[in-house]
Length: 391
Image (cartoon, rainbow, N blue to C red; front, top):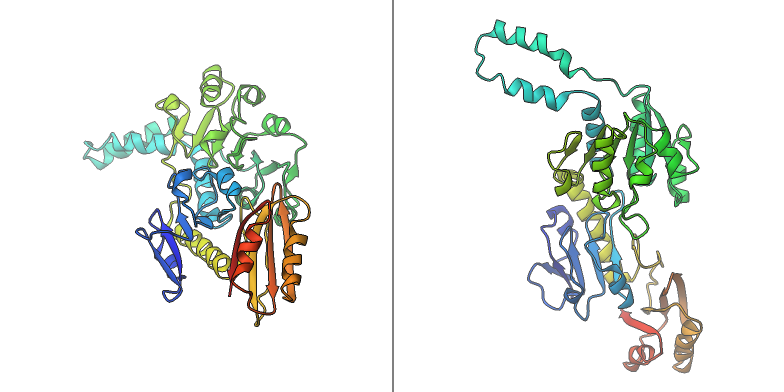
């Protein structure tokens, strides 16, 4: 039986995907084969010996020690796109809040709660509404930094608002490019995007290359009326640079899903308490996706949506067994394993070998049940990290 340790509350719809006859799942599981979490900050020591995979019910994995997991052959999964609609809708709310005096107007009306005469109340409202006058999104230019699952959806909804949309993503995948509307104008640089936008929406992950990406030099290029929306990750923006740009009049507003102590109470800053994926639908979508990925990996060795291992899918043969193993991405490992199989007169039915950066992963379907010493023999090969036999 496979054992899965949960370190956050996971939506029941996702947990129900695990067959109780084959999986033991819960927050008290000992010696787990896999860990399932959301925002729990996973320490390296918590990925104990025997852990084969970590599943993140969400897109960001900055709460997981990915490099350490890779070094130990632990596959880290995430759920790109599962919460995309929820984030997109919150970005739209941020865009609307930036252009219209909605929050300010609500606060003003709340302050009139003692006014009980309807005529007087209407008079006050009509005479005061001009101070909350805003402007429309139609005709404005939205710059989208990062055109993946969420960024492309934000671009699409902005086009529906009759906005002009420009985008920049140096790591745009082929699949993402196919999803993207031809009406989105591609920028040659991040600097060009910031300089031309009335609003900029950030949709890049928090990785070493993007930490502090939005800095003083970049904000110096923005138009004074520009609004910056950050519903991606707090770490990609330098809060000191935001404070300085607002104070100097180089930025009109900063709307973020990640409150920063340095920006609390500052005029022009509006922050929500990390609500991006906080919908019932998003939590269920993420839970179902990550559960299915863990199930397929634990049962069949297949990998989909991993942030540190290559994508690998090999249809199971109805006969024989499957060997799954990971190794350092160096020459002659696969050949050594195939030699071990040949020495034991074990016929290979099918196989797949893929690599990603410094790690390689292999699935080999064999015709007969191997002897007890085969796994130990493969493990003994230099640079092999871990080995599994899947009946």
